[in-house]
View 1 (cartoon, rainbow, N blue to C red):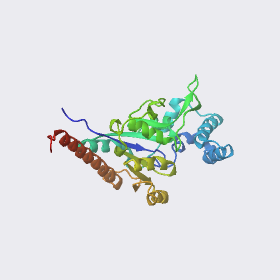
View 2 (cartoon, rainbow, N blue to C red; view 1 turned 180 degrees about the horizontal axis):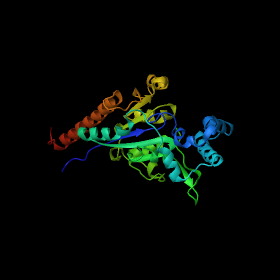
View 3 (cartoon, rainbow, N blue to C red; view 1 turned 135 degrees about the vertical axis):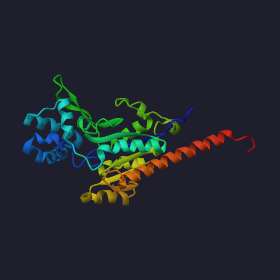
View 4 (cartoon, one colour; view 1 turned 60 degrees about the horizontal axis):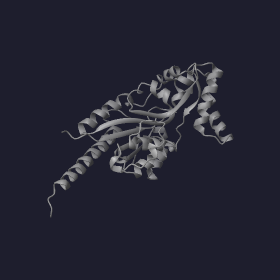
Length: 285
């Protein structure tokens, strides 16, 4: 009987990690005209003045501005705005390449999103169908299928719970019992040592640090003109590596992730072999 391949989870932030800027700045903002120029500033002020969650504020403001600008906020429309999102070099065929490499190395690679962006826009983007699961903010809809209220909010601290869901193999977003239940490390679907997390900024720090401290690999990606934050995270030992956000075939980032997958595969083989030898030992050895 062929041994089951170990699963490696690649977990990604979205904005600034896979795509430059914020996803709303593509299709959604194009229909708002001058309103879009002050959107993020307004969202920040709204959060500060009300001691509110910045993510909740931006989501509320999206609905408000859409109504003022008379643009659609149906589920279908929001997914449609995602089609305009543009990505860093190599992103669109990255996932298939890494999965193929994983199979050659003897592992199964799964891709996950853990983002404070909008699930609807991510689902509608060119890469929306490649992920095992998209953990991101989302809206509730009325009887006319128009967004009226936040349904799910993912901020920089709540991001970590989704890593535990991935770790334990919990796919139900509403199951808050199983995610907090004790599960022995050996029984978890994807140990943290097989998780690779890619993020771009300070909002990813809790996730990157958690993965790193639990034996996984955290990678801070950056655009050339914004390298300082990633390099600072590296200097402070919050991440394992800092790499330019270039996902092109044969590039430095791809080679790094391939090396990480090789290491995980080798570790699994050595652990399996050690277990087999232990079971086959004769009494007195």
